[in-house]
Amino acid sequence: MTKQVQVASDDAVRELLWDALAEVPDPEMPVVNLVELGIIREIEITDNSTRITITPTFAACPAYEVMTEQIIEKASAAGASRVEVSVRHDPPWTSDWISAAAREKLRKIGITPPGHHHGNISEILLEPVECPYCGSKNTSLQNSFGTTACRMIYTCRNCKEPFEFFKPL
Amino acid sequence: MNPNLAKYLIALADDELICGHRLSEWTGHAPILEEDIAFANLALDEIGHARLWLELSAVQGDEDVEKAPDKQVFFRKAEQFRNIQMLELPNGDWAFSMLRQYLFDSLESVRLGNLKNSSEKTLAEIANKIAIEETYHLRHSQAWMKRLALGTEESAMRSQRALDALWPYTKQLGVEIEGEAELVGEGITFSSADIENQWREQVEPFLGDDCELKIPDISDTPILTRSVHTEHLENLLGDMQEVARIEPEGTW
Image (cartoon, each protein chain N blue to C red):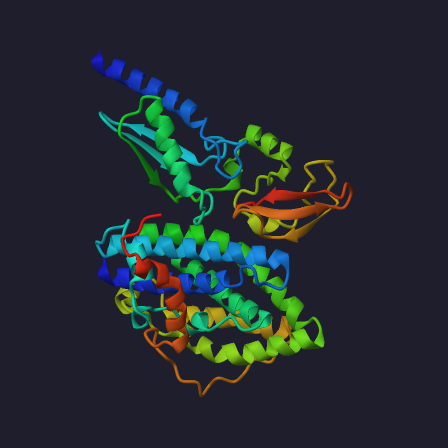
């Protein structure tokens, strides 16, 4: 009987932590959080410690250390004890993990989210990229590299606005 | 723990690190703004990849994973570095830097493609992770090489001049990396000589046919090991290590 109670309470704590971590904004795109970007992969609770596993987007993402600090801070504030953050690269992070809600938020700040590519990046890069402002597909790539490791720069030929495209990864 | 693998990974990390440092030197100097941004991004990626390899090397060499990477980067002397010479040469003109980038990006593509099949799980995972990011690097340098080599008379001339200068250094791609013989036997890594051959099969048709460049004859070029460096590496390290050496215990 005690065991059952223990399991239920761990689940409840985990649920609470997932909610807490959904309040950690991406340091470079604060409108979206780490849970909806798919960066937080797993929360494990043992007797007296909490292990949070993350999969960073780009290997060299400079926001990684800030993220780790914020994860520890939020999880601790939500009552987790001895929080450890560990990194997992298998499977590697993919833009396919970005949730539908996060995709909408990105579009609103002028970043077109990538379509689902199921691992075939080269193919999806051949498809036209839709302008987040006017919806036109008549757009052109200005630079495969942008303001952060995960974005490319485009301009729209229809409404003439520059915008960014979240790199399919 | 595997000391041979620890040594092997230092060579991979040094290639990434030295390449990343040279790329970073273009920041603020690239011919157009877009490329300034691109090279800064490429530099960031390569240095990030170096860090992953250095961390794995620390694990395999039973060293402190937190401290070992900085120690390797900032406190080794030139003769202790194991990068290929091509990457330490000064940046030269834009054609030289772009061609070198293409040569290295395609080496990465072939080498990581092999290492994805390593019997060492973490090595295979990291190779796979880096390979995905490198897709963008190779696309970029390939597109630029075509534009430069097939562009104006001057850009074609500069591309050919860069190829003449860089091509002899490609002899070094196939030299055995320290620790390699044992690792290949265990299926952990793959023969550098085989990787060089696979690389030539991709690169020669691209440069010779698609870019219409003339591939120099390098049959008489001597092959140097990865412990031999030009004086340029020492100068590069002078810049890269200066601050860390002034204040070794400094925190940021």
